[in-house]
Image 1 (cartoon, helix red, strand yellow):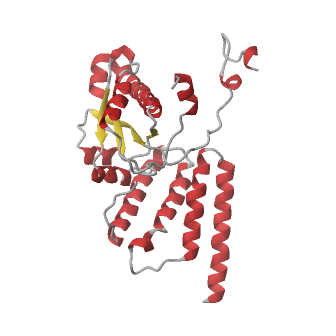
Image 2 (cartoon, chains in turn purple, orange):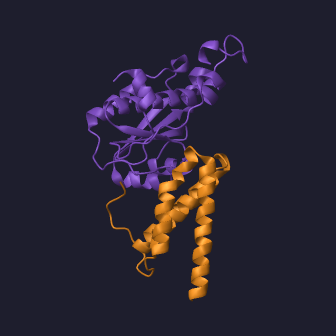
Image 3 (cartoon, chains in turn cyan, green):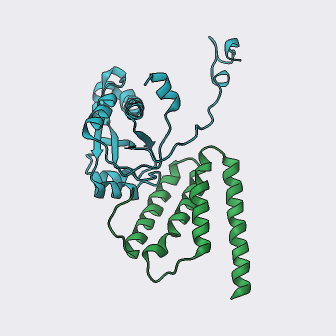
Length: 179
Length: 105
Protein backbone atom coordinates (compact mmCIF):
# COMPACT_ATOMS: atom_id res chain seq x y z
CA UNK A 1 0.00 0.00 0.00
CA UNK A 2 1.28 3.44 -0.92
CA UNK A 3 1.92 5.72 2.04
CA UNK A 4 -0.26 8.50 0.67
CA UNK A 5 -3.15 6.09 0.06
CA UNK A 6 -2.82 4.80 3.62
CA UNK A 7 -2.81 8.32 5.06
CA UNK A 8 -5.94 9.32 3.15
CA UNK A 9 -8.00 6.16 3.51
CA UNK A 10 -7.23 5.17 7.11
CA UNK A 11 -10.18 5.60 9.47
CA UNK A 12 -10.55 5.30 13.22
CA UNK A 13 -12.22 1.97 13.88
CA UNK A 14 -14.66 1.59 16.76
CA UNK A 15 -16.06 -1.86 16.00
CA UNK A 16 -13.89 -4.95 15.64
CA UNK A 17 -14.24 -8.60 14.75
CA UNK A 18 -13.30 -11.08 17.47
CA UNK A 19 -10.31 -12.51 15.52
CA UNK A 20 -7.05 -12.13 17.38
CA UNK A 21 -4.10 -10.30 15.81
CA UNK A 22 -1.13 -12.57 14.95
CA UNK A 23 1.99 -11.84 16.97
CA UNK A 24 4.14 -11.21 13.90
CA UNK A 25 1.78 -8.38 12.92
CA UNK A 26 1.89 -6.95 16.43
CA UNK A 27 5.66 -6.89 16.22
CA UNK A 28 5.53 -5.04 12.89
CA UNK A 29 3.20 -2.44 14.38
CA UNK A 30 5.52 -1.96 17.35
CA UNK A 31 8.47 -1.61 15.00
CA UNK A 32 6.63 1.12 13.11
CA UNK A 33 6.19 2.95 16.40
CA UNK A 34 9.83 2.48 17.34
CA UNK A 35 10.96 4.10 14.08
CA UNK A 36 8.95 7.28 14.58
CA UNK A 37 10.80 10.62 14.63
CA UNK A 38 11.91 11.72 18.08
CA UNK A 39 13.09 15.16 19.19
CA UNK A 40 16.77 14.93 20.24
CA UNK A 41 16.29 11.19 19.66
CA UNK A 42 15.02 10.92 23.21
CA UNK A 43 12.69 8.03 22.33
CA UNK A 44 10.60 8.60 25.44
CA UNK A 45 8.06 5.92 24.55
CA UNK A 46 7.27 2.65 26.26
CA UNK A 47 4.68 0.33 24.75
CA UNK A 48 2.45 -1.93 26.84
CA UNK A 49 0.85 -4.60 24.66
CA UNK A 50 -2.40 -5.86 26.14
CA UNK A 51 -3.85 -9.10 24.77
CA UNK A 52 -5.25 -10.62 27.96
CA UNK A 53 -9.03 -10.32 27.68
CA UNK A 54 -9.53 -9.85 31.41
CA UNK A 55 -7.11 -6.94 31.48
CA UNK A 56 -8.59 -5.52 28.27
CA UNK A 57 -12.00 -5.67 29.86
CA UNK A 58 -10.76 -3.73 32.90
CA UNK A 59 -9.18 -1.11 30.65
CA UNK A 60 -12.40 -0.75 28.69
CA UNK A 61 -14.34 -0.16 31.89
CA UNK A 62 -12.13 2.75 32.99
CA UNK A 63 -11.88 4.28 29.51
CA UNK A 64 -15.05 6.13 28.49
CA UNK A 65 -13.65 6.63 24.97
CA UNK A 66 -13.01 2.91 24.41
CA UNK A 67 -15.61 1.62 21.94
CA UNK A 68 -16.33 -1.58 20.17
CA UNK A 69 -13.99 -3.81 22.09
CA UNK A 70 -10.75 -4.90 20.48
CA UNK A 71 -8.68 -8.06 20.71
CA UNK A 72 -5.54 -5.98 21.15
CA UNK A 73 -4.65 -2.66 22.68
CA UNK A 74 -1.29 -0.95 22.90
CA UNK A 75 -0.82 1.66 25.58
CA UNK A 76 1.82 4.19 24.59
CA UNK A 77 3.42 5.78 27.64
CA UNK A 78 6.00 8.53 27.85
CA UNK A 79 8.92 8.28 30.23
CA UNK A 80 8.98 11.82 31.55
CA UNK A 81 12.14 11.28 33.60
CA UNK A 82 14.04 10.11 30.53
CA UNK A 83 12.64 13.05 28.57
CA UNK A 84 13.74 15.48 31.30
CA UNK A 85 17.19 13.94 31.52
CA UNK A 86 17.84 13.97 27.78
CA UNK A 87 15.71 16.90 26.66
CA UNK A 88 15.34 19.24 29.63
CA UNK A 89 12.07 20.97 30.44
CA UNK A 90 11.06 21.08 26.76
CA UNK A 91 11.71 17.37 26.49
CA UNK A 92 9.58 16.64 29.53
CA UNK A 93 6.66 18.96 28.80
CA UNK A 94 6.44 18.80 25.02
CA UNK A 95 8.70 16.36 23.18
CA UNK A 96 7.59 13.43 25.32
CA UNK A 97 4.01 13.90 24.17
CA UNK A 98 4.77 14.88 20.56
CA UNK A 99 7.06 11.88 20.08
CA UNK A 100 4.47 9.47 21.44
CA UNK A 101 1.85 10.97 19.12
CA UNK A 102 4.14 10.42 16.13
CA UNK A 103 4.78 6.82 17.23
CA UNK A 104 1.03 6.26 17.44
CA UNK A 105 0.44 7.61 13.95
CA UNK A 106 3.13 5.26 12.61
CA UNK A 107 1.43 2.37 14.39
CA UNK A 108 -1.99 3.28 13.03
CA UNK A 109 -0.69 3.49 9.47
CA UNK A 110 1.23 0.23 9.84
CA UNK A 111 -1.84 -1.52 11.24
CA UNK A 112 -3.92 -0.24 8.35
CA UNK A 113 -1.35 -1.36 5.79
CA UNK A 114 -1.46 -4.83 7.38
CA UNK A 115 -5.24 -5.07 6.88
CA UNK A 116 -6.06 -4.09 10.45
CA UNK A 117 -7.87 -1.12 11.92
CA UNK A 118 -7.08 1.01 14.93
CA UNK A 119 -8.21 3.93 16.99
CA UNK A 120 -6.19 6.27 19.22
CA UNK A 121 -7.94 6.97 22.53
CA UNK A 122 -7.19 9.68 25.07
CA UNK A 123 -10.45 9.39 27.03
CA UNK A 124 -9.28 7.10 29.78
CA UNK A 125 -8.56 7.42 33.47
CA UNK A 126 -4.81 7.82 33.92
CA UNK A 127 -5.08 6.99 37.60
CA UNK A 128 -7.04 3.81 36.91
CA UNK A 129 -4.73 2.65 34.10
CA UNK A 130 -1.69 3.15 36.31
CA UNK A 131 -3.32 1.08 39.01
CA UNK A 132 -4.50 -1.73 36.74
CA UNK A 133 -1.31 -2.02 34.70
CA UNK A 134 1.06 -1.29 37.59
CA UNK A 135 2.75 1.56 35.74
CA UNK A 136 5.59 3.29 37.62
CA UNK A 137 5.36 6.98 38.49
CA UNK A 138 7.92 8.16 35.92
CA UNK A 139 5.67 6.94 33.08
CA UNK A 140 2.59 8.78 31.85
CA UNK A 141 -0.03 6.89 29.86
CA UNK A 142 -0.41 9.03 26.72
CA UNK A 143 -2.60 7.16 24.24
CA UNK A 144 -4.36 3.84 24.03
CA UNK A 145 -4.38 2.33 20.55
CA UNK A 146 -7.05 -0.28 19.96
CA UNK A 147 -6.21 -2.65 17.12
CA UNK A 148 -8.06 -5.47 15.41
CA UNK A 149 -9.81 -6.55 12.25
CA UNK A 150 -12.41 -3.88 11.39
CA UNK A 151 -16.09 -4.72 11.53
CA UNK A 152 -17.14 -1.37 10.09
CA UNK A 153 -16.22 0.98 7.27
CA UNK A 154 -16.54 4.53 8.60
CA UNK A 155 -17.05 7.37 6.16
CA UNK A 156 -14.35 10.02 6.10
CA UNK A 157 -14.89 12.93 8.46
CA UNK A 158 -14.89 16.44 7.00
CA UNK A 159 -11.43 17.96 6.77
CA UNK A 160 -10.62 21.66 6.58
CA UNK A 161 -9.50 22.53 3.04
CA UNK A 162 -5.82 23.19 2.38
CA UNK A 163 -6.65 26.71 1.24
CA UNK A 164 -7.99 27.47 4.73
CA UNK A 165 -5.05 26.11 6.70
CA UNK A 166 -2.11 26.97 4.44
CA UNK A 167 -0.24 30.28 4.23
CA UNK A 168 2.48 31.12 1.72
CA UNK A 169 5.68 32.60 3.12
CA UNK A 170 3.80 34.70 5.70
CA UNK A 171 0.76 34.10 7.82
CA UNK A 172 -2.41 35.31 6.13
CA UNK A 173 -1.06 35.17 2.57
CA UNK A 174 -3.08 32.74 0.49
CA UNK A 175 -1.38 30.36 -1.87
CA UNK A 176 -3.05 30.92 -5.22
CA UNK A 177 -2.42 27.34 -6.27
CA UNK A 178 -4.73 26.06 -3.51
CA UNK A 179 -7.72 28.27 -4.33
CA UNK B 1 -15.89 -7.73 21.48
CA UNK B 2 -16.84 -7.79 25.11
CA UNK B 3 -15.77 -10.31 27.73
CA UNK B 4 -17.33 -13.70 27.14
CA UNK B 5 -17.92 -14.23 30.85
CA UNK B 6 -21.51 -14.14 32.03
CA UNK B 7 -22.10 -10.84 33.74
CA UNK B 8 -24.44 -10.48 36.72
CA UNK B 9 -26.68 -7.47 37.36
CA UNK B 10 -24.38 -6.37 40.17
CA UNK B 11 -21.30 -6.62 37.97
CA UNK B 12 -22.98 -4.70 35.18
CA UNK B 13 -24.06 -1.99 37.61
CA UNK B 14 -20.46 -1.81 38.80
CA UNK B 15 -19.36 -1.37 35.18
CA UNK B 16 -21.79 1.51 34.67
CA UNK B 17 -20.70 3.08 37.95
CA UNK B 18 -17.04 2.84 36.85
CA UNK B 19 -17.93 4.42 33.51
CA UNK B 20 -19.72 7.30 35.26
CA UNK B 21 -16.90 7.93 37.74
CA UNK B 22 -14.17 7.92 35.07
CA UNK B 23 -16.34 10.04 32.77
CA UNK B 24 -16.93 12.59 35.55
CA UNK B 25 -13.19 13.03 36.00
CA UNK B 26 -12.56 13.07 32.26
CA UNK B 27 -15.18 15.73 31.59
CA UNK B 28 -13.18 18.30 33.57
CA UNK B 29 -10.40 18.27 30.96
CA UNK B 30 -12.14 17.04 27.82
CA UNK B 31 -13.98 19.10 25.19
CA UNK B 32 -17.27 20.54 26.45
CA UNK B 33 -19.36 18.46 24.07
CA UNK B 34 -17.99 15.24 25.53
CA UNK B 35 -20.22 15.89 28.57
CA UNK B 36 -23.52 15.34 26.72
CA UNK B 37 -21.87 12.54 24.77
CA UNK B 38 -20.88 10.68 27.95
CA UNK B 39 -24.35 11.19 29.38
CA UNK B 40 -26.07 9.77 26.33
CA UNK B 41 -23.56 6.91 26.14
CA UNK B 42 -24.24 6.21 29.83
CA UNK B 43 -27.96 6.14 29.07
CA UNK B 44 -27.37 3.58 26.33
CA UNK B 45 -25.38 1.41 28.75
CA UNK B 46 -27.99 1.84 31.48
CA UNK B 47 -30.71 0.63 29.15
CA UNK B 48 -28.86 -2.70 28.86
CA UNK B 49 -29.33 -3.32 32.58
CA UNK B 50 -32.50 -5.50 32.17
CA UNK B 51 -30.36 -7.99 30.23
CA UNK B 52 -28.29 -8.59 33.35
CA UNK B 53 -30.68 -7.88 36.23
CA UNK B 54 -33.46 -10.46 36.37
CA UNK B 55 -35.58 -8.20 38.60
CA UNK B 56 -36.00 -5.78 35.67
CA UNK B 57 -38.19 -6.64 32.71
CA UNK B 58 -37.22 -5.77 29.15
CA UNK B 59 -38.95 -2.69 27.77
CA UNK B 60 -39.57 -2.17 24.01
CA UNK B 61 -39.40 1.61 24.41
CA UNK B 62 -35.99 1.41 26.04
CA UNK B 63 -34.83 -1.06 23.38
CA UNK B 64 -35.83 1.39 20.67
CA UNK B 65 -34.18 4.33 22.43
CA UNK B 66 -30.96 2.36 22.90
CA UNK B 67 -30.92 1.38 19.23
CA UNK B 68 -31.36 5.02 18.20
CA UNK B 69 -28.63 6.22 20.55
CA UNK B 70 -26.14 3.64 19.35
CA UNK B 71 -26.84 4.59 15.74
CA UNK B 72 -26.74 8.35 16.21
CA UNK B 73 -24.32 9.11 19.05
CA UNK B 74 -21.35 9.18 16.67
CA UNK B 75 -22.85 12.29 15.04
CA UNK B 76 -20.93 14.26 17.64
CA UNK B 77 -17.73 13.52 15.73
CA UNK B 78 -18.87 15.09 12.48
CA UNK B 79 -22.16 16.93 12.86
CA UNK B 80 -22.73 18.80 16.12
CA UNK B 81 -25.99 20.33 14.90
CA UNK B 82 -27.18 16.87 13.89
CA UNK B 83 -26.24 15.61 17.36
CA UNK B 84 -28.24 18.41 18.98
CA UNK B 85 -31.22 17.66 16.73
CA UNK B 86 -30.95 14.00 17.69
CA UNK B 87 -30.97 14.87 21.41
CA UNK B 88 -34.04 17.06 20.86
CA UNK B 89 -35.68 14.18 19.04
CA UNK B 90 -34.78 11.84 21.90
CA UNK B 91 -36.25 14.17 24.52
CA UNK B 92 -39.40 14.45 22.42
CA UNK B 93 -39.64 10.65 22.32
CA UNK B 94 -39.33 10.54 26.11
CA UNK B 95 -42.02 13.23 26.48
CA UNK B 96 -44.39 11.31 24.22
CA UNK B 97 -43.73 8.12 26.16
CA UNK B 98 -44.17 9.96 29.44
CA UNK B 99 -47.59 11.17 28.28
CA UNK B 100 -48.55 7.70 27.10
CA UNK B 101 -47.49 6.08 30.38
CA UNK B 102 -49.14 8.79 32.48
CA UNK B 103 -52.43 8.38 30.69
CA UNK B 104 -52.30 4.57 30.67
CA UNK B 105 -51.40 3.90 34.28
